Length: 256
Image (cartoon, rainbow, N blue to C red):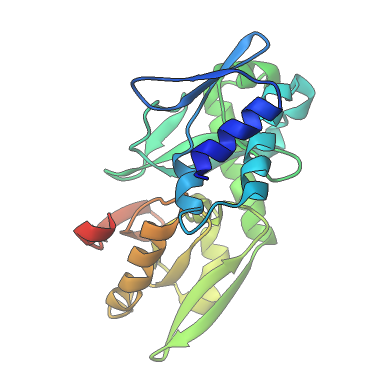
């Protein structure tokens, strides 16, 4: 049984009718007065090696929990900027370009930390925030996560390669935090280079160690091609001037 077939079984057993959108191939599911447009692309990539019925069921739980979310479930202290590859079919309401292939998207993280929702005008209206104020709050919240995070470093040919331990489920976004320098400078120096092949993967190293860049390339490409939540194979330089893409690792055609 495929992921699609398992998901459709979940819909049927839960009493939901559905149809397939002819343009996108997404499932269109009516829930009360709402119609959900559900893409299985990420889930199929995640389960490429074999269907996990429990994982499909959890995916369905998360989808339908989003419909049941009430105004009381939203909070300004759970607004964040998250990194997304900008090839999505429908553009987010609040997003800004980080590079040619990556945007930062304004998201809301559920209290349980398992559901990431793109912020809509309705959510901001509920919170009583303007788009500008919400964006500032999202950066401040990333800064809070940096303060709570731990940076570990391991030597690669004598050069420290840093990785972050954090409870944030999309640690890649921490490269956007305004106080990242305070986390990395002691062990890695400043400015730093970074790679974020998927949303929960972040390597950083001192910008003076350019020789380390090619060493991390194979790992970046592997993670990017295997992850259901891939971002980019780009390499970023992070300094007091912000985040800038300075190059990208090539993805072989047979794995793209």
